[in-house]
Amino acid sequence: MSRPLVAEVDLDALRHNYRLARAQAPASRALAVIKADGYGHGALACARALESLPDGERPPAFAVACLEEAETLREGGIRSPIVLLEGVFEVAELERVAALSLWMAVHSDWQVEALLARRPSRPIPVWLKVDSGMHRLGFLPEEAPYVWARLADAPDHACDLHLMSHFATADEADPATCRRQLATMRALAERLGAPLCLANSPATLGWPEAHGAWVRPGVMLYGSDPLEVPTAASRRLLPVMTLRSAIIAVRDIAAGEAVGYGRRWVAARPSRIATVACGYGDGYDRHAVDGTPTLVAGRRAPLAGKVSMDMLTVDITDIPEAEIGSEVVLWGRAANGAVLSIDEVARHCDTISYTLLTGVLPRVPRRYHGGFD
Ligand SMILES: *Cc1c(COP(=O)(O)O)cnc(C)c1O
Image: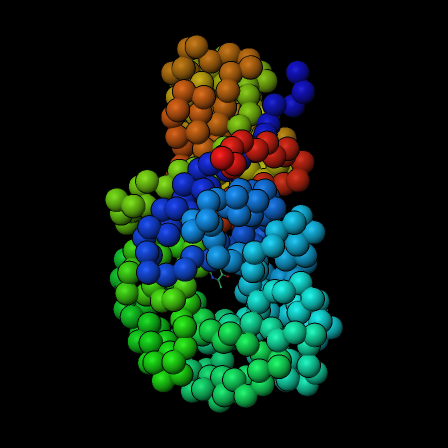
């Protein structure tokens, strides 16, 4: 058999999750964030599946991190508006932005100067990015009205102005910081009469007051629950990616024997160990601790021993039916319907779902299901 590891992508689940995002913010328009190659799922496949939703259900726009990501989508035939969340990285990109009918964030003085210095072939829709407290990107709230006025005075250069900002702590149960950020942005939007876009996935799911004219769900579209405390809605998210492999070897070891590099896992009882074709060279996190869950033949089985480059080892002592060739799901949905949440795996790796999803390496073949009516 060829190497059994694949990343299966369920595009119907993506569409379900997008519908769920819209239903959470019914008065807002929902950008679908598909940066970083659709959080590792394949941006073009994701965009096509979402763009083929019926009229009135499809995303009014997509969002990516840079011009190259938008070009890939345009070359693949995606016609919807696409927002560049960080705008341009150099002046020379502006003409491509206009030519490809992209929208862009503007977060720095040099971007404003560049946009106003030379008239683009058509005016560019601009989302003015404000630093309301995260201190990563954007204009200070007190400078924003001045920048806004300059852009509003140059309709041949910039059009369709929006205000955007990003929350630093929307995933946390304590909303104090978010509340401050929201108050700042609301006051600014009121003063400027501006449409507002603030909410990432956690705010889309958990914080209706933060839904402005637009919301910007990302990771929830891929089925990861971004909230510290899940809600009824977040529990309805479906996993989009299943990282699936198989057992390639089985051995019985005595109590006291150790498994893998550094002898980290030591058998407390006579144990059966399965070797699985998946390792950190595929993007599975090497920080996974002993006990990190997997699904072997649809049943939970703990990682035993350090992850190697191309393989990992699992304790299948309690799964007598497991044998060479048995299915192993590292996250996602098993053939018997059992689900292993990527968020649970991420916690065992001391990381977040975002790094696991974007970390699946190119050597893992993607296999797509669904996505069209
Ligand atoms: C990535 C990103 C998002 C989406 O965030 P999620 O937490 O994945 O929902 C929204 N806005 C901006 C500016 C982003 O960079």
